Length: 71
Image (cartoon, rainbow, N blue to C red; front, side, top):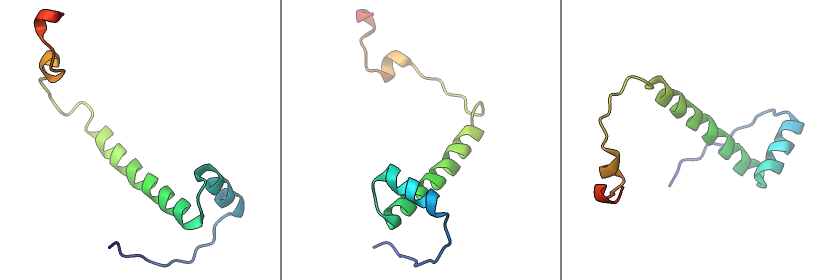
């Protein structure tokens, strides 16, 4: 079971209402989805930082499980 933390926050009403409209969910669910997006953004930034630093040797035919004679 996930630990839950109860918080009190002052949020811009218009922003919260617009976010809830977009998600089609209640306040808690909308805030959880927004926080998850912030976490994903950090992971994406870390992945972008790796851009150009990895050297991969990939055989596309093998990775696509294709028979080379069919090409």
